[in-house]
Amino acid sequence: MALRRVLVTGGAGYIGSVLTDLLLQRGYEVVVLDRFFFGDTLRDLAGHPGLHLVRDDIRWFPPEVLRGVDAVCDLAALSNDPAGELDPEKTMAINFRGRVRVARLSREAGVRRYIFASTCSVYGFQDGMLTETAPPNPLTTYALANLEAERHVLPLADRRFAVTVLRQATVYGASRRMRFDLAINGMTLGIVRQGRIPVLRDGRQWRPMVHVRDTARAFLAVLEADADAVSGEVFNVGADDQNFEILPLAERVAAAAGCPFAYEWYGLPDHRSYRVAFGKIARRLGYRTAVTVEEGVREIADGLRSGTLEDGPRTRTVEWYRTLLQWHATLRQVVANGSVL
Image (cartoon, rainbow, N blue to C red):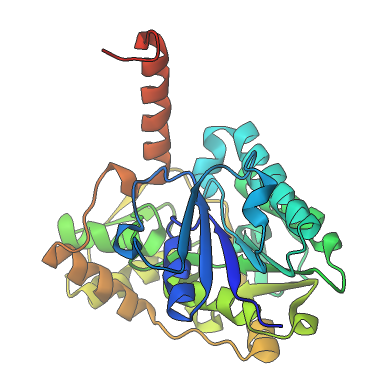
């Protein structure tokens, strides 16, 4: 029986909004569960007959949301290493325990397929090309929360409930919920707007990269594969030829954006450095990335120059979370009888 109704947690986010659109284009009925912290990012899809929005949280949403759902793509999370350190306990509550809750409720509800959005950050600092069997080395709360969640959701797999983990490379590219706190996106913004690229010290660290549309396509590939081919499996998502050392990557970004190369250092030296092998997903599912770094950079640069992409407070995850927390604290002090004024 085909999978037709898909729940996407975090479906209004950077990756989730791209995945939601892709699923709708493929004829799936999509239920998006999201807090909508970053605004109405799906407004251009409003009115689509196959889209259903649920404004809730994975930590406490009612199980009834899963009624009739065939598959779950679980992307809801505090979404990167710096955000994870903003409140480590909240990170564990959401990225670990909240997502394990989604998986368990999905199994109880008769959902047939569950795809967990993890990260290559679980590899931490290691030499060589890392396959899915490499020992994890999580260096941040974000990485640890993802790894712990992996370890709890994978054993839930059985013949009626297929569980798959996707360890995504660092994502880049344009999205409805635009982010400029990601490496390539931030580099492109810097060179286009300020004429120089911000580079995290010391520029010798390695990172694997993947375009946001390509990582969305990986979820689709798992959804449409035979359950036996993906259940209980971990797949790295990216391409071998998109492993980059950060400073040389910055030079490529400047060239692709059509700008002279200039950069400035920021931050403390980054202790995360890893290169990742992506052969397994290619062999098992025939998956290949389609977008190059140069194409992704040009897409962002053109959007910035034309005004279709805008920088703003909501494009930087940690700063926006801090703003929301400050507003919440202020409102708690001034609200009386349920009203501000």
